Amino acid sequence: MVVRRRGSYGEVVRRTVPPQLYFVVSAVFHYLGPALAVLLFARIEPLGVAWLRIAAAGVIFWVWRRPLRAWRLLDGATRRLVVAWGAVLAVMNCCFYLAIDRIPLGTVAAAEFAPVIVLAAIAVRSMRNLFALVLAVAGVYVLTDIRLSHDWIGLVFTALNAVLFAAYVVLGHRVSRADGVRRIDGLALAMGVATVLALPVGFREAVPAFADPGLLAAAVAIGVCSSVIPYVADQLAMARLKRSTFALMLSLLPATATVIGAVVLRQIPQVAEVAAVAIIVVAVGLHREPTSPRDRAPARS
Image 1 (cartoon, one colour):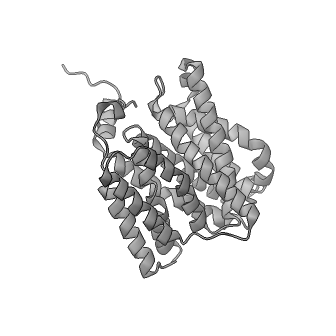
Image 2 (cartoon, helix red, strand yellow):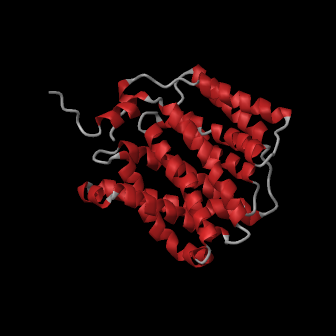
Image 3 (tube, helix red, strand yellow):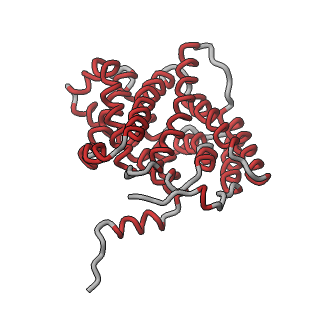
């Protein structure tokens, strides 16, 4: 008689599905959420939308994973890592919504990619990967047409969001490979921390949503699209990709934003933008993951 270990089928699926596919899922949903969020700004202030997004995702994760059991098993260093990640998630999401309320989404997306270029560049070990990095940077520059804004407040929030996004990648990558942390449980704990930390600045502005079921449903949808699906996919990808590879693949985000803008918002890209998307796709395709065993960590469910 053969006894199948509980959860083994899910583990086989996670090991079989290419990590790049998880990233594509994350990239698609990464901008579906903000597209919905912008529509809510007429009814709810940006910080209110930010907290609703965080809280909706936090509740879903805690009901799904019940991560307090995992918290009791963590050592002090790992607990501090999770709390730091939660703090970054809280401040990053607030800065992001304050930024897109003042600055075009494409510019904010391009700024997010700027710090992670450094993460990708630090670990370049071959001319092929260096060429891929240069192509990705060129494609993002053409695609987003980065320019200075006269809205200095919006520019400050954009810069803060970009720095915190790089911190999200670094801390998220560490949590995904930390000893004793099941991938999604670490994320669930961090989202719980983020929900509590963002409460003082966002709850008051989020109150109108609790009196309107339609607004509340939209806020929950934003949380699912912006935080649940992409963050879970990020963790599954991070656990099997080097941080430098993941950072380079983030160049796909502005390209994804262009495609979603064309399909959902009917913002048809120009020829140069289409060419830039093609350049970014080629750059990501050229990059090769290092094969050294020390660059990889064993997968955990």
